[in-house]
Length: 206
Image (tube, rainbow, N blue to C red; front, side):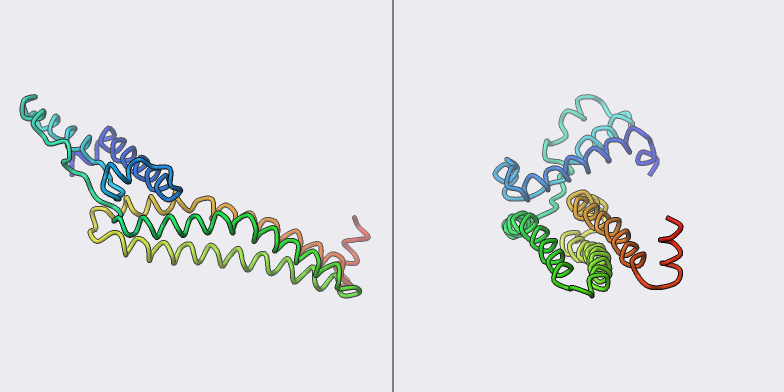
């Protein structure tokens, strides 16, 4: 416990997690050599922490040198999970370009075709963007719990898996928050164009 509280060891732990997270992303996108090197597995390498501990305990250099190269290698993901992950990521990357463009086109077309009800449709569009963005954030959290629980069979590797999931899905989180930021002005614009007294007064003031 003492060793783990030291800044140098904490930094080693942080670095190990970052390397594993990047390895996870590389494997998911099919750009990693680790698949063949580690037998289709994502591995968290904690050997630097073990060496730091041995040094701080005052063990002789000859003993430290005899520590095996594969000591403290924690397997994060199995080979069959790697294949499923790569297929899922490949599908999401393709849909990630087509679906947003299609969604915006359909929403714009809906507003255009609404005629005298364009304001109500614009309001619905804004509310839908916000609702879907919140849904993405919720699914990311729920999905993250499911992924972490399925991969982290032991409590000792749970922080590493959680960090990997958080980093790997950060772009999804950013897109969801961007949707909320975009949706709010759309809803406000629809309200501002309405017949309510407050909206009319705001328009006159502007």
